[in-house]
Length: 186
Image (tube, rainbow, N blue to C red; front, top):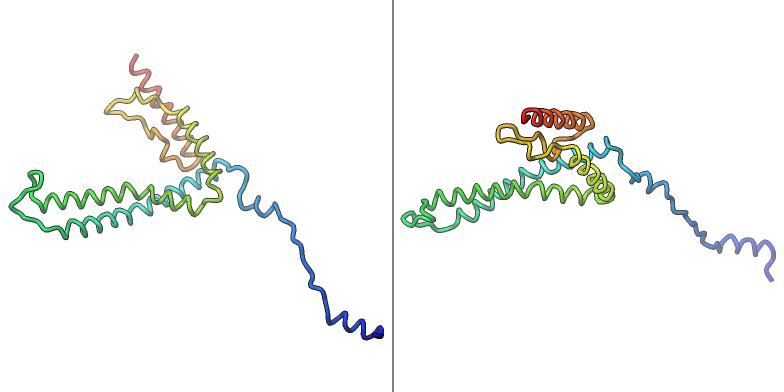
């Protein structure tokens, strides 16, 4: 039989591994993604998204230019055979500029996709706030039938709104345009 000293020594040598159970913290996830966005936060996010769109537009346009040059620059041309009645060099140059335009048009779309990918945790909050924002824009904007070729409606879609101050200015501009257009017709 083991003595008490030997038993205590064997107990110290053979220790059971301790398991630590962690409680799932709800405060950590709530701190990273708030339940709702305030309007200043939303407008700051919207400004940031617009910056991403603009930052990606130039590289996409240059990629369009490079692809246009790579494709149209390698085509064999016969200067004696016009394409659609245009000299082939001018036609290929116009097509290359068209590729730049396509790249510039696709740039904001690519920028939005990249922005949404990097901010995917809060996209549902931003989408719900977008919906509310565009409902407010649609409710407060001037009727498009009131515009004339010389006086178009100012910022019809509210694209330039980036802060509460700019939103209030947009509301004042819409009201001023509405008063001007309605009272001039009478």
